[in-house]
Length: 371
Image (cartoon, rainbow, N blue to C red; front, side):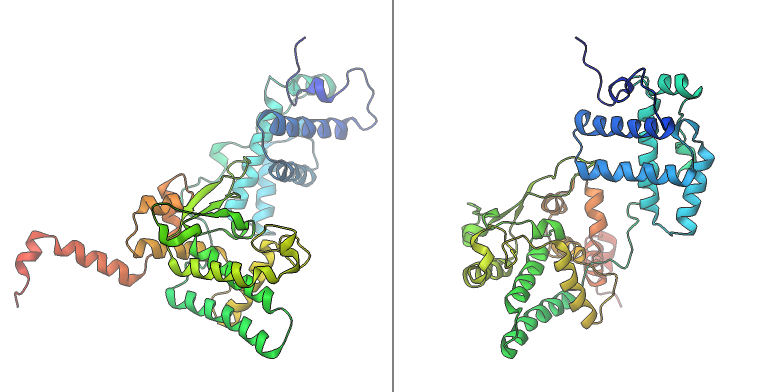
């Protein structure tokens, strides 16, 4: 017996069955087939698959046509509307176009039978409408908002001082929420101290810290196991181990685990590093809201987010003399060019590197001391 391919027309449309709304039924079957191909054939995660399905449905609604009658002009009109009306970022537009391209590749592939099915039912067939020559090229290493920069060391210290001050203020006033404020202060320090994304930080568990035999001074905090690293192309989260390099961050976590976490009622029912009082894990939105509160009170750029702590970590490690390859490994980047997006060294550091380089030039060395 020959097994039918994931996503094939024969697998998702019953032959000989009269469809009441043939166009919509075939379109839904195409999407079901594409979903099966992405989940079963390519093992992509459901959030990624669901997002792609929504993009295709959004384009179909805008075009008012079905995939077997789509044209490149319809895609151009949709892109124009997204730019002029919704003002989407270039990276978002490219993601939408990539999604439409992949869907068209699927329904146009002879391996799944949708071309023949559409020819039989509608007398026409789908074609690829998204081409390299009519989509924007990815020529910039980073298309992120330039205001989302690393924090200076003074700004970083101000954020941490404000977070610690919030805990003291609530304790002195006898107000509720001191423990939650302490949790958030610690999580902000963890995000910076190990260069984590916000989601990576809130997904940590107590046992994710473990000993580094090469650096026994950190005891059981020499490494941090990150289990929820950023996925690539819909794959499962990528784990990594981050070596501890900041002793003060270890002190902050150790104090939190010894003196604060045991006071949480929910800490006994979960191993989450940041549990709620009911035991559920607190999401990254709560951390973002807390950071935004302190950022606004300090008068910092409103574009700054908790992710800027990760940028700050990379930048400060480079300024402190760590090898770029080590920083790349700490961040979990596959390419050094990606790490370069995160590093924005200060003018003082750049000038010091320049002076060191010029001091090694023989011609300039001979001129030293010359009036």
